[in-house]
Amino acid sequence: MEWNVGHHTTKCGFKFFNMWDDHSEFNGIIQNGWEVEESGSTMFQVCRKLQNLKQPLRKLNKVSFADIDIKEREMRTRLLEIQEKLDKDPLNLVLQEEEAQYAKEYKEIQ
Figure 1: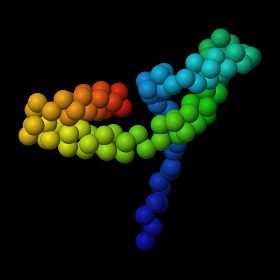
Figure 2: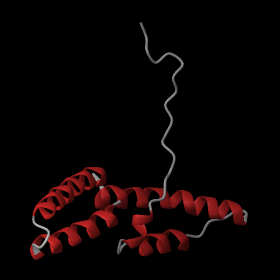
Figure 3: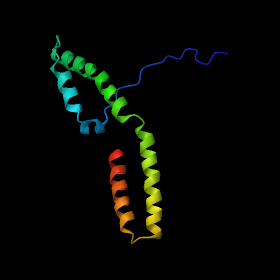
Figure 4: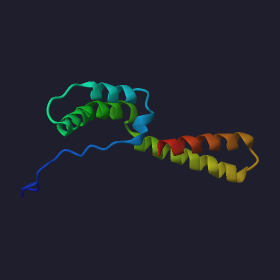
């Protein structure tokens, strides 16, 4: 029995992530990719420049943002733990500050 009969594998589409824009190397990557001279019509030049940016942006994503979903789950779990402790001791200033910090970081990572 063959499971993949007639099944064609295709590459995943390219997705832009807004979090890249906050990375210190992002503007340099875009600038370097956009400065490359391409020949052909204006639209073809734009398409080629965008195509040439895929690999550097994928590398940035892999190096700087790998396992972001795991980090997000860990951050959420830790935030919930702190919030449970804060429910039991609402006047604890240390827990209040810790909860505020984790909430801010969790919001940024989402």
